[in-house]
Image (cartoon, rainbow, N blue to C red; front, top):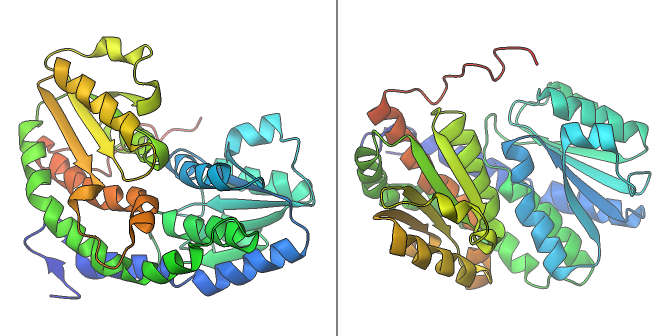
Length: 341
């Protein structure tokens, strides 16, 4: 029932998911107006700045711009940007930041750094009174704890490329995003049995090998580092499917647990190749493929672009079941935001 936790899905609050996703998509008018203003002001480069998972979440949109545009859109690690700088950083830079809490220290420092260089600063977060929201020129606020940030970044970069005549399909994509809450609820429901089965089969697995490519390399990195390592204290190796045959493949053995993230973009053949090879070596290969989900209301081109959102929903179900079978809370940390560094 809408507004309550779905008792058939472990730890799943349908209303919360719908509300959070709808709040990010509802930012479209603000995002489009802001992008238009920035271009009118003569912005000629964009920095997408994050830390950890929010940094990796920038990669699909850097990739989108690289594939379609001569406009400079680059992802940067907040802490590294502050100490190394960027040759294009200046008054014609738009710097975009994301933070769930709005308090990530490295991101706060990066906001201050780029502002001193004259950049226009934008933040996506769910907390209007947070240091990041109050520190930027433009704060676009979603529901608290809304995740992931793919919707906002897709709208921001998509509008930018559209206005430059480099992404004609953008209006149709942006219109289709209104279907996202319904589609992701259905994805969660469909993914639940496989998620439970995966967790049961891997309750004692302590090492995973993960691969994915194109716009899903970001999620491969994120799920490996932020979920399996940070939230479950499990050892992982992660490798881009295009780089699969360099180095890391030597770690594969018959009992290696392999996770393959597969999307619907032009890089799919590279991940197909990696998947086929892993299945020659390992007897424990799990493939999570966006093609398995209906995604009602989305065109083939849009499906390819929302793949990170889809797999975030799918693997959210896996994470909940790993938490259950391993009796290890996803909120438990030993060091992150526990010890100073």
